[in-house]
Length: 87
Length: 403
Image 1 (tube, helix red, strand yellow):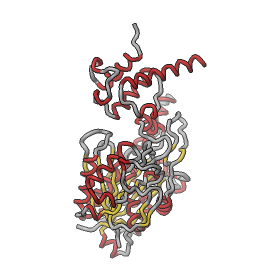
Image 2 (image 1 turned 90 degrees about the vertical axis):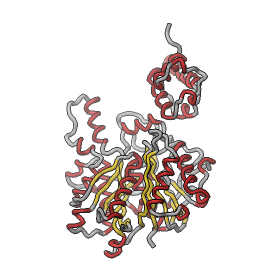
Image 3 (image 1 turned 180 degrees about the vertical axis):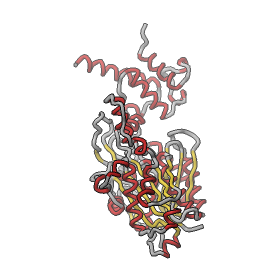
Image 4 (image 1 turned 120 degrees about the vertical axis):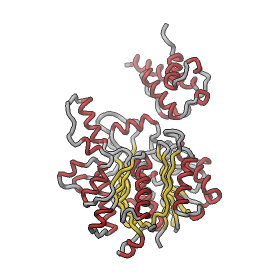
């Protein structure tokens, strides 16, 4: 079975932060995980690579929880899917 | 111990190609921020920078030597020429033998490197330009100044990110104060507006999508700027004896390392450097009448800086105007310290505080007098210029008016 979007986001965060994936849940806050502003920029960069998406600064600025990242990535993937169907 | 005077200043920046244009723009609150020419290599998400307009290298360097200077090194030499000319230096053997040249540059000449990499990685060429190494060296500006004037004294370059030229000026000040050098040519230069570097700043997500609004509640980040400033430092008594007209004195220098985070600044670290500058100059906090702030316009810097100023100055902070001229000339990285010390020297000489431009809304976390949008006539006896670099490296200079 292939990984879900959520699982992929959790895996990317765990890998970037070098922490066990079991410790990362959708409910985790960045503060819980010790993610500071530079760490979060690294994570955004790795998520962009993982999903082949572009996350703009304004969207990213106020994110404080893992579930917000999952939601944001899901929305960008939906938009990407829609764009590819239209073209 | 000598008192140290600034007797010459040269500036080239987005708000003017020389010191007069620079200062006139600052007191008019005129910003040099606007759309820069988009690189041919690909798109950049942010559209604006503080780029120098109307600059033609050939007008300053008519001979083949121009090929030996990357953009930042050209700026270094142009600023040094203007400063040396203003100071009216009468060169003699001793001055040529012992004058120090101390510069700062964060980036150096990487435009040449970038062209080389494009050729190698993209165009599949098998060679780069033979001058890529000498063009790229961060010390090439200092070396070019030394060659142009035949100056053989201690010559070197600091690279401490956004504090580079503040460190350069501070050490030049100490060398002249102690008598280790009879004169110093010091300052900094950077030319950061090229594709690879713009991409790197884009990735850090700290560049504003429109303009630089330091201390404003709606601030959205920094704006990159290019430029240089060089200053002539010499003992005050020597300057007066030879009939030079000092612009201001440098009276103190402090530096510190945050030792905490590679990019997040620390108010304790900044406060430590400010206290260091006051102590070095034997200055009481209440004597400071103006601060040319680091004021990058990022969320993190500006509130940290205000907290540091409050920590050092206490109740006096309420009566202490500060402003960030980066709102006009942009963040010139390794040139920032020198450009802002020059602005501070003119502030003391002219009795006018340059404003923080583009200011729209007060921020409760930055609730000091930031001289919003309008210059203010105010005679100030002493002032600080602060630089707080990535890597947590801080450098602060204290200046005094010459009356």
